Length: 78
Image 1: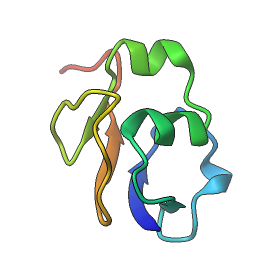
Image 2: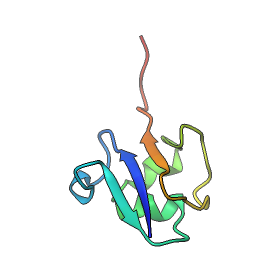
Image 3: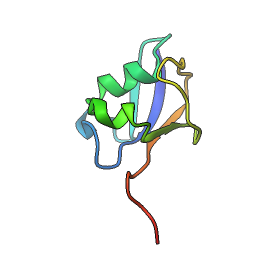
Image 4: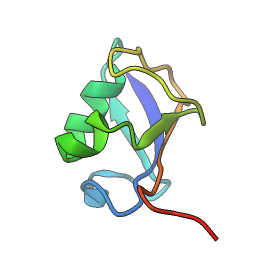
């Protein structure tokens, strides 16, 4: 089992995360598996509004224990 830290922003089911903002997934899980597990709308991940360890990664990227998944706001700026 692997623990992934998640910063969900306005997306997904936050109630699935523990008090530290982490989710436990089976070994060999991918970014796509994680996004589905927390109920991220398909349009969000198809448009790439997420990063794994602060880098853009494909949906088939295997997760490692301690990874961090963050979401990027579709509109931001100053």
